[in-house]
Length: 212
Image 1 (tube, rainbow, N blue to C red):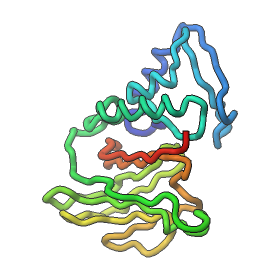
Image 2: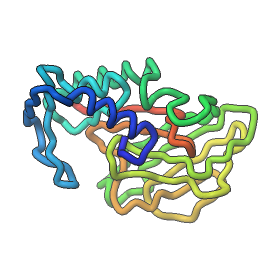
Image 3: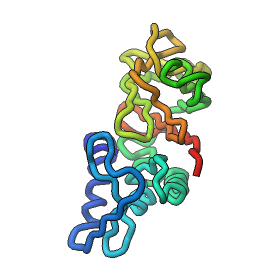
Image 4: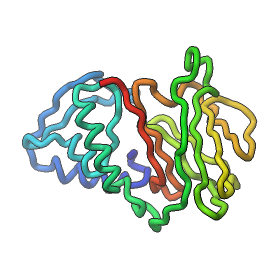
């Protein structure tokens, strides 16, 4: 998580504990920098792979960018999610209530060129509870630090209803919302769909694999 997001402070503190006072080795792998010109490196602290340790503790997300250790990172990330560790805990930043909204379906690779068919990309969410759920300020995001969709104020999902969140632009309705992103959100090479409540707690997560 980013520093101002749910579990961001805890993740930063854990990272600091893992590296402070130790011999640090940086190892390149895959792309050299990210979109913010930050170095992309495997970090070893007295021989410990810090990146992998953070993912294992639920303090980081295993991104699917084709880096050499992707398979190991993704496997460990799935384990930390299943164990509800760190940022994946239902009480990470809230009261621990399972509010009953789930990711039920998605399309990440629409027909044609993705950039020409943004509304062919979508994620479907369902209210599986017996009560209306206010999704105001909830967030739908991918595994990157770029893509965040914030649900509009006053948007509620009734019991049994599904809402479709499309990547492109359009007129919002009671069961269809539009991200209005300038580019595709969901990477065809593999991505993680994350739904967070207004406190930032992860309510549900789904992942589709890339090619290892």
